[in-house]
Image 1 (cartoon, rainbow, N blue to C red):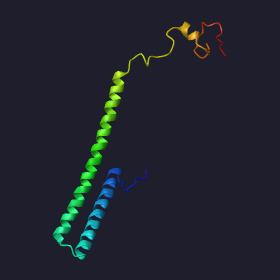
Image 2 (image 1 turned 45 degrees about the vertical axis):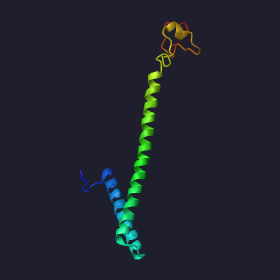
Image 3 (image 1 turned 90 degrees about the vertical axis):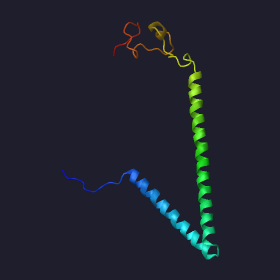
Image 4 (image 1 turned 135 degrees about the horizontal axis):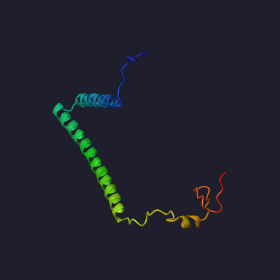
Length: 125
């Protein structure tokens, strides 16, 4: 038996690396914007404050979106739970005949399909 010595990267590690690349890209872009604003003549403390304001606005926007999505999920769960509680058990009762005589009177009844050997039309092929 030949052993495979190559290590495989798990999906979790792939996602972690993807998130890290995104974070590093964000920090790189932030430094570029900060440098550009300072080069345009804005003082460094004002640039830092502006970047913090933009970052906080993005975080607040994400939290706002997450809040409404969570509220929508809670609403869907409560609606499903309420619909399940209001359902009567008679709605989903089995619709199969209770006795063999009721089964024989249903349209399209074939005794061969139901292995009804006592029926006069039963054929054993």
